[in-house]
Image 1 (cartoon, one colour):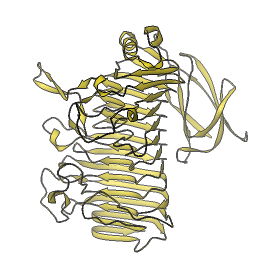
Image 2 (cartoon, helix red, strand yellow):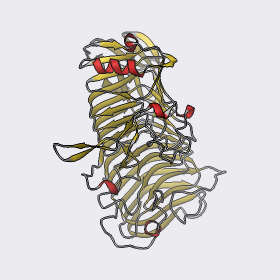
Image 3 (cartoon, helix red, strand yellow):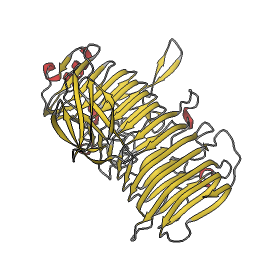
Image 4 (tube, one colour):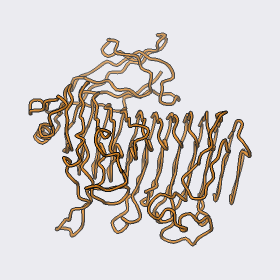
Length: 519
């Protein structure tokens, strides 16, 4: 039995078990801290909280039958100061507005300090973080979003830098600069920031009108719950986040960011409440996150073609591991706003449960020639109740022009600067049960075929009473039920040890495949 520390702060240690199981541990372990039994461990990633700064701790994991143990000595980090928001006037009764007190504590915190939110319900609007601090939500602490949109400041889409005669983008909405309400937790141009603890960030969207007429811009576009722009070295760990007005966590143009062992919960019918949407970000780790929401669990993006006058920025070097994805439209999604491209993504040891789709790539003509999806690697995944486990849709019909013939035409059109490209994707060791719609729906453009698809050790078992539905969102597509793999417009396709149990109809439907091998 092996384990390692994946993250240490002044008050927390997060551990990851080394095994081949998906999200849940292969067996139950007892956790001891300084020889005191703390609790039983049932997931591969877990966090020990409420520790003291700059102290050594003896961490021991023991199998439930006491046949194996692993002990390590770890030291928490130091901190410069501790500030309690109640000392700044925060009330925490759920009625009083505590925005000013929380903001004051953050504003005066020295470099390396920890701002503590103790037990209580703190009603607030947008809180703006600053660099080199930790925001610590203790057990029983709730940051509760004010439900009145007029109480939130508005972030303009851009501000002008007179020295450089250029614009600085502050606010984005669905891949383009656009004014939006500031988010409950907002960070602009930050570095070395941590949001940790066992408390809750409740944006309280259902108590207001954020989910009403949600596609209409009223005053400004909806806020996120956590919104980060041009930030570096940010960690969000341990907290529960719920009831987001729109995308829950939205980092834009950020580097070296980690989301570790958090829980994200939004109602299944809440609109556009994606879990974590890194946009034009580099070096992202999403580890041990429990998702249950109304849209995509993780959606990797990189903007739309309209932002091309500025420098396009890809999303790349993204690791998603040991996560549980429930009830979303897609578990791990790329696109459809991906004009900067998405590269080097690794998804492993995750459990997808009752999502509409598992691994989902969505793009379309008009995203641009820089919209390159490449080097996507997915391995050791379990899926249960996922309607369609694998999809690539090059005809995604959302956006104002999404139903135009240019987007929906299945004819071979001329390639130009608007044509996206899908490169190499590899899938291995994936087990799916209770599949309903389609094993895989992989549909490239005829003028720019998917470069390479590799499937190895894939098992699909269908639900007996499966219901027909659409495998993807594209024009003129019929509903399917217990369909096999559908592959269209692909340069290179490799299938090794791929099995389907009781599909209706053909296991493989192939169209316009240049190089095809089944092993």
